[in-house]
Amino acid sequence: MSNPVVTRFAPSPTGFLHIGGARTALFNWLYAKANGGRMLLRIEDTDRARSTDAAIEAILDGLRWLELDWDGDPVFQHAQGDRHREIVDHLLASGHAYRCYCSPEELDAMRERARAGGRAPKYDGTWRDRDSSEAPEGIKPVVRFRAPLEGKTEILDQVQGLVSTSNDQLDDLILLRSDGSPTYMLSVVVDDHDMEVSHVIRGDDHLTNAAKQTLIFQALGWPVPVFAHIPLIHGADGAKLSKRHGALGVEAYRSMGYLPQAVRNYLVRLGWSHGDDEIISMTQMIEWFSLANVGKGAARFDFAKLEHLNGHYIRTMDSDALTDTLVATLPELDCDFDTSPYQTAEASDRLREAVPAVRERAKVLSDLLRGTAFLFASRPIEIEPKLQKALDSGGREVLGQLVEHLVDLEDWSVGSLEAMVHRFVEDRGLKLGMVAQPLRAALAGTAVSPGIFDVLSLLGKEETLARLGDQTGASG
Figure 1 (cartoon, rainbow, N blue to C red):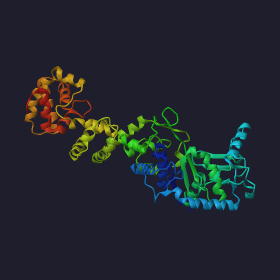
Figure 2 (cartoon, rainbow, N blue to C red; figure 1 turned 90 degrees about the vertical axis):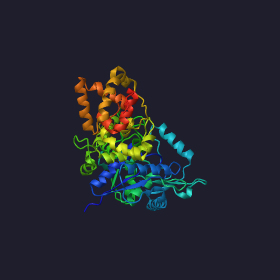
Figure 3 (tube, rainbow, N blue to C red; figure 1 turned 30 degrees about the vertical axis):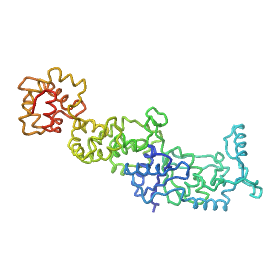
Figure 4 (cartoon, rainbow, N blue to C red; figure 1 turned 90 degrees about the horizontal axis):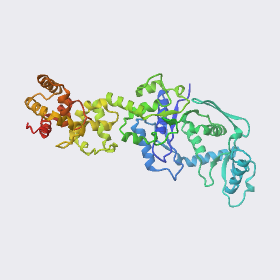
């Protein structure tokens, strides 16, 4: 019987959950779910100077927003320090580690000699075979791993294939600093073993660490987890991902009006594929996901594709659920206009009624607000210059005649309004646009609004007649 699948997502809490980290979390989550396993969460906070509670909360909040739940409680790496030091004692006792008493000045000189000789600036093994009795006074030692000097270390990576490293290229890396604090390289190995991690799925910027960590696993007689190093994300121009490309925190995407299901769908397609499928549900992701379909090349982040996906989910999401999401996101939504008029119970009810009429052209949540802005405009409403022309070139006169018919209309539904306006147009030998354009100008003041009959219906009879009266002088 094969061992159960256990993956882990292990972010460092020195900042937000960036989009690359979110994809790593997603791939770990999907692999665990696809194989009936568990995904654990480890906060790698051994850098106490840079780790913050705010960053930890941002990471947890980002995972919750993406609906990537983890199994059990988060493990905090710094809290395992005593266990890490215990393992160093085992390595010292077995001869797989040793104390090094080199001073900072000696290490600097060592690196300079290596560079001068055209070699990589690495530790030269000065204390590999010396006894601690020879130690100089006043130097607190570090503990180094005794790496093999010959042969090679091979890793059968599930994405990169066979990766072979000549052992003479590896350093005697530090396991324990002179102040007694464990290093990242040691802590990761011990934690992965203690958490029974079967698969380490992470960015390929960690590929060079895999050989070093494999040697520590082997020295301790522990099973080596399966490695899968996924390519990093680049910008659309092929350059390393930066803030201008979209290397932002997950919370920034929420503020920009993206839906979590759209972000998940987009991230899973960054470096992984299932034929030509573009729209992939969470159920399908779990059913289809495998490391075999992760590509070796860097994926390219493209905001246009993300917007396209987001628009799809806005159009197809349950209308009430979409409105609930919009209302919940309102306080943090990044808009270039005042959203306070939308943040009342009455406004929520109006949005719920209006969202189905404006969702078709929306790409992000803020587009839903722009499309419904006319509902919350104060009279007399401001009219865009290009729409003002529709009123000034005979439109007011046409609207003045139309008001008489609107006043008498009892059924204020979209269908009834549309039928009445079409009769009005036909009776006067007009084109629909000669009525619809001035109507849109007088009622919405902007072209960013739903179809004109939806505008009439959503405004209601009283407000419609009042706005028309502002332009025509006619009274309802």
